[in-house]
Length: 268
Image (cartoon, rainbow, N blue to C red; front, side):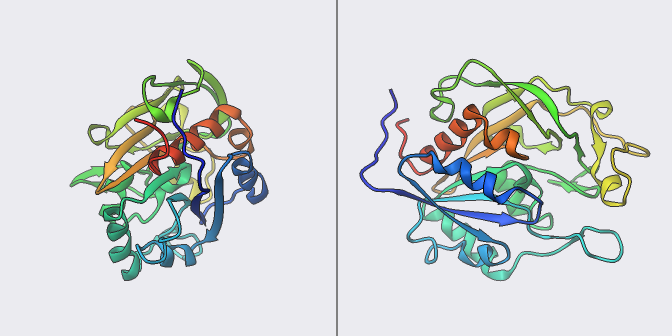
């Protein structure tokens, strides 16, 4: 059985905003996690807290935000916005403090002009064609309400206490992954080819569920991973679009395990 330290409540700063979500349903996901306290802060204020001093009272930073994108820009929305200098200095310093980081779902699209951020999370969701580590890449794909079977990779603390597989209806991404940098945790049986996704750029231009003029190479079915970042541990979980995930007991277990492991409250 895993070793869990409940001697003091584990504190999470949860950064939100930038993408629509059911705030009450999302908050309820954390309520059953014994010994875990959550403080939810909206962007852009959350970015000002992502530094060693402001995070002194927190064990884990949970990212459920999508900063760096201006969807109200008159032309070419979303326009890309650079991160504030305080964050550019503060987040790397936070990693040297060893604070845990758990990133969920649309966080993969955050801060598209900041290469450090994509490297930190282990991948990128692009709203416009761009570059990743010097290679040209297309805009990413999305698909709503896809029922998929998720298979945890056994033997890691983040997948402990989970069944061999479970079903979840959610929004998968056809995005860019840096698989060589991460430890796999979760795979999906969804089909990661162009024919099963729609163009993110077409969607923001008003053409929902369109792949017209869009091409994307087949992608990976890896939808959850862990990695080291400075002195910190990071977990990214691609599922998490809405109540179907929030209310799923196995998804909740994944998120709780990720919080405890990144906070070093789970045994290795």
